[in-house]
Length: 259
Length: 362
Image 1 (cartoon, rainbow over the protein chains, first blue to last red):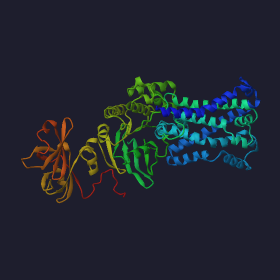
Image 2 (cartoon, rainbow over the protein chains, first blue to last red):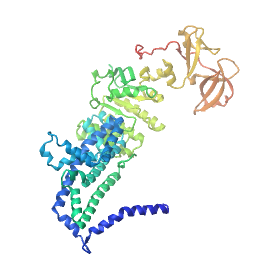
Image 3 (tube, rainbow over the protein chains, first blue to last red):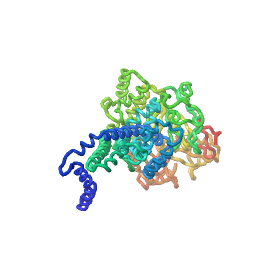
Image 4 (cartoon, each protein chain N blue to C red):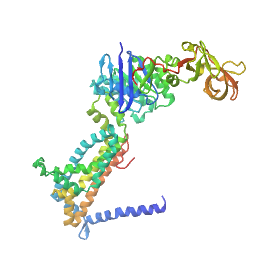
């Protein structure tokens, strides 16, 4: 690499790493000395555990719903409605354009209708449909890439000519060959839900991100510790995507963007 | 009794008519090829038999049973595709086993059957390999074994060799034929390669624009094309537009040629005289008989050399033994003759109706 290349790389690296390093340093401070005190404080806070596990449950629920919804959809679009693909692609990008605040206001409005059971309104799972919408672009691009890497038509027809129906074709033939994309989409969705603040806050639920916000406004050093923890979660999710993509015998996964 | 019947098949995609009035019956164990250029409807016909497309009208009948409205996964038809179709997540033997698992065969029987078929296609050493570790030819062998594993009623092959190298293609087509004969399985084969179709089929149906132009045994298709299209499509053919003069003679640009087949045509009729390059004899000029012309090119084909001869603006192809080619260099004046009984004659004024084509629709 040329020298100017290294220069810009260093600038870029500093831009990302410096705040992170500063946050890490600050998270280990207690008064004038260094200790793991702030981390201990976070882990001992029952609210941390409650909000963390709530967000975890919401993330899993969102992933399940999103996969059940989007795998058959993307499969069908590739198999039977290839001309609709650009339309679906456009729709899938809408959550990037429509701010979550608009989304949650809309959802709250929808939930005002009589037919929504009131039991459901008090439950935090209330947030899942909104999260599924937010996850749509990530899931769609991950799945779309996976489906484009296989010959959907031929595999489907081969499976059917051998006697398999739709369910078995999807389960035994299609799913194993797009699993890398599905897992990538799941990790992205996981990272998304673990960090989604606007919707949870406006709907008045205490999830992990709203807890981070609360700590951030009340305790300085533990807030830094929490930031580092939440960073770690996102990194693990991204690492998971990389690992899946490198599993031998499978096509590499690309998340987002055109091939 | 016919085993597989395609009865009056008709298929339209919107405005476009993909196939019309396809009517074929296969005997048990017969190998029939659907041959034609791309877009002639041969693949559509095969896909209708497989159940991937519904015909606009017409029926698919197997052993007297109407399968037209039976879903593809209940038809028991083995299919080999043009594109590589092995399941990438399964190794070769799991691919072959797939159909047997779907049919809930006991594990012992599955194992035995899979081993037997993998052996049959000569891939015992590669049974545990995944599709991406197999060559194109090997993948198609596995696909063939997979299709045969379910003991299908009919074997359908959709240009299974078109993605392979020339050498593998010839090898594999002979093997497909060997297996098909050995198992006695009724087979419908789609190809655009006339050599392939002629070399392995019991009968060949030549298709163009969605209809069957001619159907018959390979030798008849080659030697006695019924229509100009078939003559053109199968092998190389010299086409001479001539006028019938006397009994058994035609006039081609002032040259009188003896053609036995011209007898059925009335004097003065415009006809197409079809001459195979291998029946055309080329001699250095001098005796004045036959078609006079000039050698314009040599194409070396190994045992034979194809001479291109310009005869008064008409290009002729003649295959002669390569040993004689040196005596007829490019630029030499030559005369070309053919045995009177070897040429086909087709009337030009009225399109001859082949027996398989229904003239009524238009």
